[in-house]
Length: 565
Image (cartoon, rainbow, N blue to C red; front, side, top):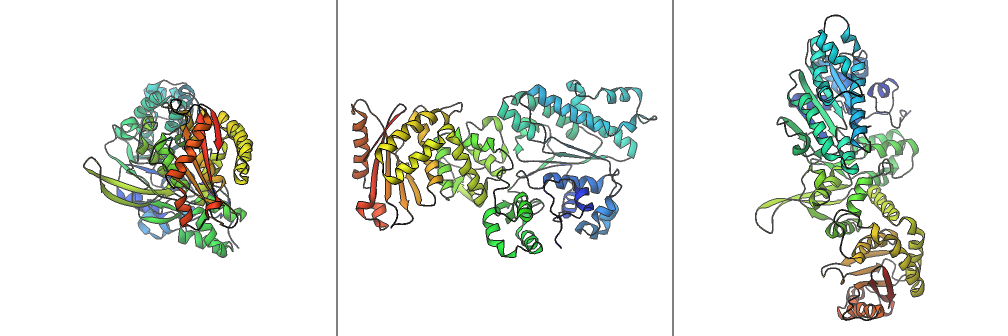
């Protein structure tokens, strides 16, 4: 009988006691311990088993874990004698910032203080006897949701001292989802206040803490050293391209296929691979998203489990509000192509809106992109750098972005669908009616960042083209020539079924009022450009006869659109 699949349980002890489905990742303990790093930060995408792994590490090392030996018997780490002796031999401070998702700094700081206060509550026995002197007991009692910054930023360091004195050994500190407060601070506009507070907290806990044996932090992104780690010169950072701990998070293909065999799903290997494979850590190219695998084992249905496990709001914001280059590269990704970018996996959140490199770095760290290849290339202006060949991770991520694009049209979604139907039917009158409604409702939405585009039609274009990519993907291959800059874009839709559908060429043009008195003149100029540049040659070469090629000019004047042939 296959084991029970528990959805959402991240407590190692519960999973082991109830004999729930579990992929053995206990050799992480050996790899981590033998690295001898004082403070280790590991970044992995969300829902990749970070919290469960931290729970496993806590149960293994903690002196307070009375069931540790029983939990690890039968697992790989228990086969190594020296680690059987290491189990249950350290005091462990374990906390998580996963719940710090507040809309302002005051509430976020208070939430962190509540977590620290709850941590102290676990060790109130330290107030008994003479382990602490009167000043230390006073500090202990001062740790609360309303404490001042001095007490808050010293709380972990002081607790380390107290536990070290009580147990006679230095402590291990585990901090899960360390970067959640930073992401929320960026999204909600209190970045500077939060970084100052977290920097002070981390300096005391991980830099000047004389009672620290080892520390392990996990998160989704590597927040820049300048932001919160400026004092931690001894920090070991493991990002998605690092070779350490390659198979400790996520499932390898062998682990997935063994699970499918256990649950009688061996024949579904190809579909599962298409949907959930594609993540790369270090040199391992066969990592699967564990959240979706576990849900699939439970339901036996192929769905976008991982992609739908959060709002993906930050990813959508970065693309929708990004500059023209970011949006063009995103269109290529949607087409199944690769893009090349220099990646700095040290995320500078307050530069995301100005730095294209930072955007791709964050999407890579978040699991939306995967690395296909890394090459050393000479830069155009001298020097050299590492060029990362990136693509969308898998089918699940592609579907997620498709759903995100549909939401971009918001209130105009039904009208947009009507436009697509009119386009396929070659109904010019209906196309004009629906496109003007769509354009009016969505122009200002596709570029609402701090540096909006100067031309409204360009904003619209970069929302409209991804929409076409998603909605017509089953019937058309979309390509776009963007070399000439806006006003000379063309969109080409090549039918996949030459017997069923026509080829379509669309040219966008902004009215030049010095040369074009009427918007109809602009339409004619756009169609004329299609003819003069012989855009149809590509379609003719692919076997589409001339009378099955439609040519449209889309003319813009402000938010008014006129479509003609």
